[in-house]
Length: 523
Ligand SMILES: *Cc1c(COP(=O)(O)O)cnc(C)c1O
Image (cartoon, rainbow, N blue to C red; front, side, top):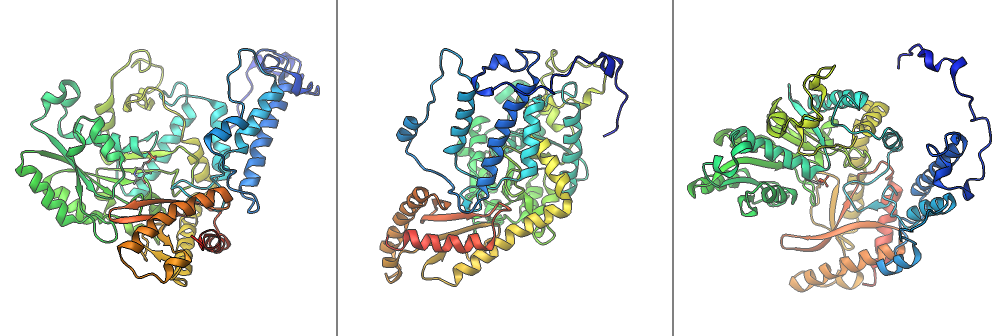
């Protein structure tokens, strides 16, 4: 950054005597009142206290990446309440206790960045992103106005423009939201606003009939949440059947739109999913776009999970047609590995977000401020305050560049292929639900010894579904592996392994397969 001349008030001769040379007093016996700002001369103690907290954080990161450390030390809630001291005291506790509290909080925390944590769509700890999060906390600002977050607002503009370029939008607008669910809600609100601008003021009476929207049977449940929150009713989120790979069937979408219209309903939006939550399927975007154009419907893409593929030349064809969408949700906290939370939603048309959500609060968004108030983002959202989620994304992207992110995505897919290849070598032990995953979700059943020779059929199916949760319980007790499971449609419980961490290597996949067999063989 450019250097500037120091202001006269801070010139060396006027600076207050630095006490940072002085060694800190013994932190353990002190109280919060012995730190800044309560004691103005407490810079050394404040530094010492924060350095110790930083050390705890660094030690947690070190052990996160240590393959000999456990992922978790599982306790039942009742046991955990006994070992932890959680009560809020009437009197202050000294800093020694506060440091112990910090240590204990991490001690029983699941290490979501561990190379063998495959449980969630957001796994992994990116160190540079963590650095961004630390500084974000120190800056502790609110993203609603340029006035109080000038650097971060500009960062947000540049990064969102970069993401829209990657998507293939020529113009547009974007916002960071607290999670993909809220991003999807923003898209649905904008879609309704575009079609029925009077709704904002007049409410339901501005509508010509019952609105409905369409998404696939395997889409994320947040769409149903949006339908409920927006007053459509969950019955008016119409679920389109999927093919055997979990992809929306466009001909069925067309049929269901006609069907809804014939019943007097008013379709306004279709949501395609790019990377479904369980199977990782990519809906055919061009075919869905064609249907949307035919019926003049808003076309939203929920790429909360799969959006990261856009960064890789090898993978981005899965989202061909995304440039034809009106809006897209893309969570950098999933495939891109940015620390939680970081979710973005992008719009092809500029001006819609503000026109849809603006309420013109005079105390925040004065129009006569001493700068261009178009830089104030606060009136584009249904929140008031907004957390700074941009710095940890921007900093990570600066550190990797587009090239680094392409490698990042390619690594995840390479590990996934390796895992599928290894599982196929032992079809007796691992049964794949989908033997060519489109994303990094690998869905499979572990088959214990006694079921390996059993005839396929409903009985074996039922038993398989019962075995997986027991195996999950054993994983958690052992603390060596974490993989999520769920049923889907007519399928009984199966594991859904997610690779979304740069820490994962071939040796971790090998370990996983052995560990599943060690823990589950006798079930
Ligand atoms: C994870 C996910 C969401 C929800 O995102 P949150 O950030 O958890 O709210 C929405 N859609 C899809 C497809 C997802 O995988």
